[in-house]
Image (cartoon, rainbow, N blue to C red; front, side, top):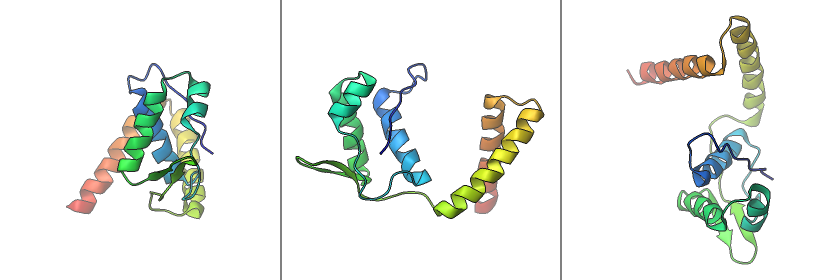
Length: 130
């Protein structure tokens, strides 16, 4: 089960934050096909947001084919996303944890690390295309 949270200072709309969190959970394997998302009522109670916001997020996920709503039963994960298996995730996470420790020791803050990581990822895919 996913436990939604909000970053009210992010500037990202609430429904998109919910969509992004479901997609991240699908990529990380914490949500699997067949899993049920929290009901709109549960999310509203937990986050104190408008029910239409939750429904908008779920409709977007349904439009993308990631979840399916079953009347009277709830919203369920239809398919997963992401390329690597969970075993690869664990190994890669360990490598990233080590890299982050080295980056922090070098004095990089969180934004520095995001910028550096994003640049390296972008370079890697540009090289792959070229």
